[in-house]
Image (tube, rainbow, N blue to C red):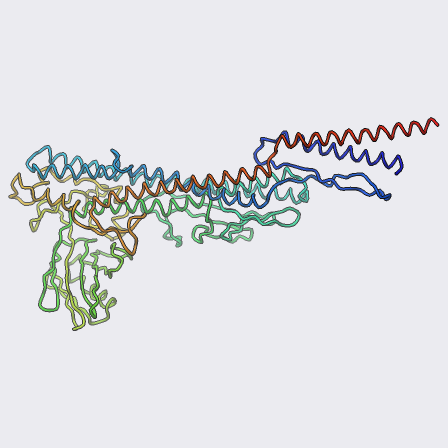
Length: 613
């Protein structure tokens, strides 16, 4: 090798060590910088044509594990989802109260039933009568407060969705800008790559993201559900039509029926997609918020509405029993039947028992699932003008359910008759639940309209389906009947003695002994096997269910955080900067620099010697 060749090689070595020194200094200075990936120089040998050569820096690369990065983004999405559920279910459990705590719904119910028991012991006691009304008011207020809190959480979720959608749009724009810079530098600028990766990871906390590598270092993004987020410099645009939330505000794929906001994505071609309707977001904070708003919190409101409805109906609805009529039918006096009241008809067809629920309507169509019984046959009929006006609807419903001519409906004044028309059918029972309007029973009975729809002028709660379901949102409207006097808690007729315990006993038994079937919601029973028990049982069940849901969500989030922390630690070990390792590399670079400098010094001395000869 010539002296000039040796000098050139040493110069290239000095330049390479200088570049390596610059990268090491960058690594050390950014040792604590979030999102920074450790860099390393790529050195390649150069050929000078004589069989030996120097070194050339081909580029600077980032040292990271793409598989761990993918796992990290997946777990980041999971943490966004579980974090939202944990925080909101914890708050929801607080609204229902910890079981047995002073403000829990089961405690307030217990105080109410205790006041009734005290009244039953001493019906003539004026203080005991007033205590019942006060305890009833406190219970109603607690249910109102819990319902208002549920809707406030739903409104918070609605606002958070709007905020997250705005952030998603911003991140997609920033990712697009960074990706264009990556393309312009052909993926050779580690700082831009780090910036783009950091934005994608942040995006994954809001929405599940799948990254596909393209040419020249570019990327395309989609959700795991197949929703295209970004491709070839064209980010999708999201919008959200935020609404004011109330108990009736539910999601529906039909825009004319939807009463909450939905996320709409518009792609580069102008095509719009209802992201929520097509279930295209499956993880991340947005998925958690949508699930809480449209499912978990709706179930909680349903639980409260069911509690309020059962509380009112159990005390105010009298059972009107049917009477066997001849050998084939039953008669039922429908006097006083109101919209929402239900006539229960038990029949057999070919030896198979069936139950028919005839729901009183004034107008409109009966919605599916009007009763909690998953196996009954539901028929809507208007009794506004008595049984005569309902016959056509009742007959049509029976014909549709069992075939024409199997049963016949007729009336005599206020009495509705259902007859089995063929030998293979039979009517085995008939009864109705009719809401009483007055504390003085007609006929005399112990039922009492203690709880009413206070926010609607103190109207009776009958479970009406006219217009909209009276049950929906009833928890926010339930209150004590202002028309009742303390004496009404005892007097069920104009001649009831002051010390008669008949009504107090009925009221306490209606809450603690009478079995009711409750509609399934939020883990209390299922659609196919609804929970059946007393009203007091149901209160305990929903309080326990909310506590269990919150504990489960918290455990899930804690487990998710452990997983994410573990992956973050492994990813940091691969990608992050170890100052000790960089200092060790620095020593090697110093030694190489010194060696190259020593060669250059030796070459200079040799050339000086030649010049002097």
